[in-house]
Length: 228
Length: 292
Image (cartoon, rainbow over the protein chains, first blue to last red):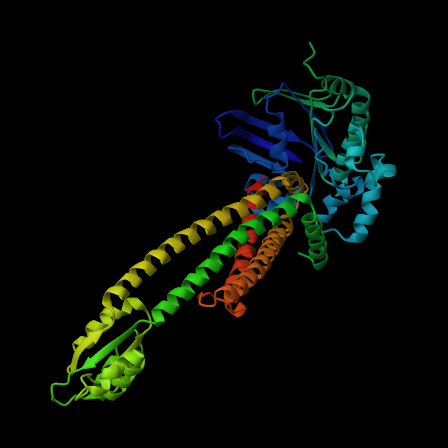
């Protein structure tokens, strides 16, 4: 599903975020990307949804070399990827329903499709009863659920989550993780960057550990830290 | 883009316009356009006064009266052929004396005592622009049968100089105001776009095409520019028409543009300018945020 070959990213400031990263993620996998702040986790995720292009190397997603995508092809590619952020990125002046529907409006889905799929997505994340609430009226966990509903409403191949539990308490974090696991069980590949040791240690999924832009550990059913 | 999507974006555009930043943008555009409108009215009057003064510049071409026959028709044709000449009118020596007598009124009584008419036959030559006076006079002077040309050379030279300075100053001020207004309007729209950069970022992340993102902003910019400029135009026109009517009644000799029809090109220009700046300002601003 995702293949990276010798991916290096150097920012305009000269900082090297990634250095020759090779990575392969299969369809349906659940991968944690861990490492200290500034290790290159968010940069690695941005490479997958084509939020950035590498300075060197190639990134293949769903059989396409996305580094070579033409500018007008990028939106079409992103419609197959769902992205979730730590800060939720919900539109504050629209209801939960409208925020989720927004992801379908931009791809010009039919009104009938929107009316059918948005309630399903909200139901899956357990927010059907708060469809008309505004984001400001929701707790942090609920806002993240709404963001996840928006990410999955177009039935993406991959869900990328950049520290989705960063702003949440441990219980709410586990709820969000269970939700992401459910999404993964339906066959969607999930790649998640996190600092949350509890979550990683409890779920025991594949762990890709980055330090200074280099993969220092790639372990199936790994923990947050390397276990002796 | 589907028709239904365009309708959806149209609705969103007008919902966005009702928000505070858009309203503030309209007010800023209006304020800039009022300044531009006042300058346009001033320039229109300056051009009007300049035109009036220039239309009064006339060359009197005196024909030789030394006894040799003068071919008036060929002189008239030669004058007409000169560039910048608007009208050529033949004035016979009798007609000239008549006019002089009328001009002098009661103090012209002595003209009837003259043994013979001392005035020569002449042509009154009207020109399009005051600055054409000197080259036209030089051209006429070279014609056979012409003895002299009278046109108040110094006065005309002063007028040409004064008009040149005025055009230059007005042009420079208009240029500055135009650039200033463009910057203010486009920056105001930029602020409105900046306030919604998060929305643009989210649209990009969920796979919105650039056209889908750009469309409501560009339409919004166009509407802000149009509405602001139209309000300013209405305000300036109403104010000007009232002021012109007052000036005409208070001092009828004041030479100002009072016909509202003559203000139409300036008004139209302002509205088009507002629309263009609004449209391009928003398109340029949004493009910056599309590179996500």
